[in-house]
Image (tube, rainbow, N blue to C red; front, side):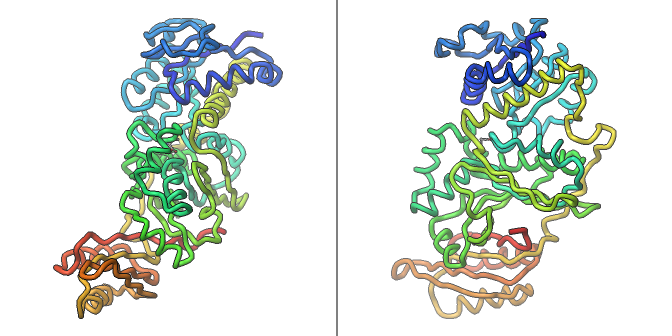
Length: 436
Ligand code: HSE
C-alpha cells in the first residue's frame, strides 16, 4: 500500500510532539492503518536544534519545498498565529494538499475562508488539536454524537488559566509566579494574555459551537471575560460560599438563538467542573438524544496535543487510502446547511452574582450601596465585610439572588461612580441550572 507522507511546518512544542508520536507509534500505526505514515519534510525557521532522530526527514526553511513536493499528501501547520499561518494553509490547499492545524485563533477568525477553499479543492482540514489538547472532542462531536441536537456546551478549555486558578486555590500561589510555571511547562500561548483574558477559550468555544450547532460562530460573537482581575481574596470568599472559581466557556442553544460566553464562574464544589484541576480540560455537552457527556483529559502540552494532531493525520491518511475523502464534513454539517447564529445579548442573562466592592469604611456606605441594588431590583442574599488594615478601604462582598445582567451593569456603574468606592467592583457570575 502507498505510504502517507506528511510535511510539517513548525517544529515547536506541538510540532516536536507530533514528530515524536509518529516515531514512537510507527509500528502500531502500521498495524492499525496498513500503511506507513512518514514525516517526510520539516520546515522551520530554526533547524539547528532539531534532535538527531528526526533528521531522516528532509529539512528546509522554505515552505515552498513542502507545497511543491508532489509526494506530500498532508501538510501540518503548527506555527500558530494568524499570518503567515493563514497564507500557508491556503497555499497548501491550493496545491491540493490535505491540511491539519491546531490553530484555533486562525479557525475562529478565518475558518470560513479556509473551509471554503478546502471544499473547492476537495481536500480535508483536520483540527482536532485546536480544542481540548489531547481530548478527542472534535471527533466525538462530529461522529460519536452525530445523532444529537447539541443543546449546551460547557467547559474548562484553557490549561494555563485552569493551572493558575488551581494553584491559587490549593496553594495560595501568586498569579504571576504560577503563570511563569505554566509558560515553562509549554501550556501557555505565545501571548499569554490570550490564556488569561479568556480569548483562547473563546477561540475554542467558537469552533465547538460551529460544529455543534451548524452555525458559523466567530470570535466576535462570544462575550469574553478573563481571570486577570481575580485576586486571592476572591478565591477565599468563593470558598466561604462553597464554590471554586473556574474560567468557563458556556453556550446554550435555544433554537432560534444561542448564548455564548467565556467568564470566570463560581462553581459549587460538588460540581464535576469544580474538580477539574491543573492543566486538565473538561468539556460537558448535553445532547437531546444522549443526555450529558463529559470529556476530560490533558488540555495542553507537547505530547497530548501531538496525539491529537497525529489522530487527524491518521484519519486523513485512512481516507486517502480508502478513497473516502470528505466522508465526514469538516464542520460536521454539510456546507449548504451551515447558517449564521443569532447570539443572545448579554443583557438578557439572569443569574446570581458575586460582587466585591472596595470602599471606604464609614457610616452609611453599606446602606448607600444596598440602596442602589434595591433601586435596580437586585435582591441581596448575603453580605460579608472584611477589613484589611485600619484606615484602609474594606472589601464588601455581596451574593445576590438571581439578577438581570442589564440591571447589574447599571447598578455597578452607579456604585463605581461613588466617591467612597476606591477600586472598580469585581463581578463574578455563579453557575446555575447546570447538570451535575
Ligand atoms: N494555551 C493553551 C492552554 C494551549 O493553555 O490551554 C492549548 O490550546
